[in-house]
Image (cartoon, rainbow, N blue to C red; front, side):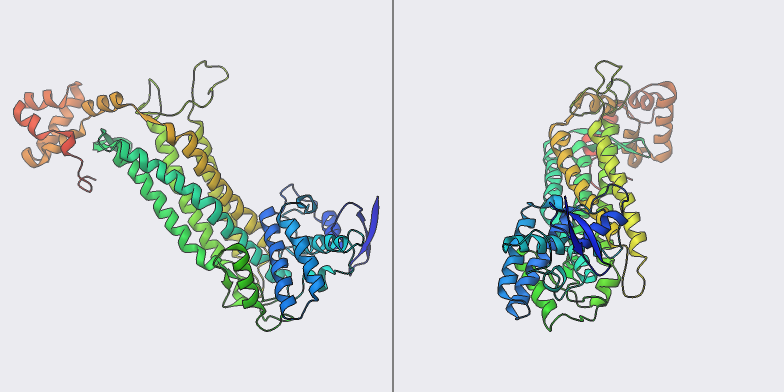
Length: 464
């Protein structure tokens, strides 16, 4: 069963159970591309804008109080997730996000009209354009929704998850602060470090990424709302931009403000590019973490085998007892996706033409996916890998004992050339450093024991 809805193009049939109207229905027909739905976070942010706009317009006398109340009630239902199925449109639509903005306008109007005692849908007493979209344009609503959704995702999901992972690594670093092992550079044996020092590098890398993400947020908190179609604010009353930014800040608890230059806010997306770059920084750090733990856990007999990664599930359908570093693999894969998303965002943001960038949906689709993947990945990796990983102290001690780069401790006493000769002899003959040093006669046993002490070779910043 269907009903007839109309827009400026003409009449079109809409399913009876749909709250949306003609423009949403046309988009369903005209953009049957892929399966990537417009993220609900964006649609909920749009509903939040409609609620805030209704309040501001009601206070200024631009909107009847009863209409504003209906809009706010319908918007609250959307924000509660009651009508998520009413937003069927895909990412691949007009580059300004107009179809999704109208989808939200129509659903809120359609539900408001039902709440007023009328039929579902329609334009009376609440009109999707004249009332729900009053003093707004898709060109300023959609980028505002992009910014709100991005900040909410970072503040409420990503930063807490990142803190969990960072704190988990910090706990492990402190627990194993005195566990001495072989360091490695160029994938080759190097001078000693502690396992705690090794893990502390990841903590610091995640700290750098977190600082970059936090530094990007203030610009994303600046909203385009009030710029309307091209940045001039046409059809928005004086003070609307500042008033709705304040209302949105109050509703979200976020430090949202009105963008100082609405022309830039509509035509460019540098704040989101900067945020995406910070997310890329985190992805790079997570890739390093995943790859290093995968190497340290390799084995258990023919690899480094210095770390025991949690055995979460069987690793092979043919090799009994095999356990794979699945958490490391998942984390590194999502890092690859985030790096790819950043490239897409960069290309899309570079394509602004004149007064409008028309690549907005693909930018926010990729950005929110990156935020979600990184948040889920950090939390999952902490819970299923870092929390229960265990160092193999015996294996670390064996590698340390057999390491040739302990010879570096002899440099100040016998010089680089003689120390290199000792290392070469030990490696060629398969002997220990002690045996090679004594055979060459460059020092005695007492001197070797006094000078070659791994625990005395751990000073930060001394070795390359």
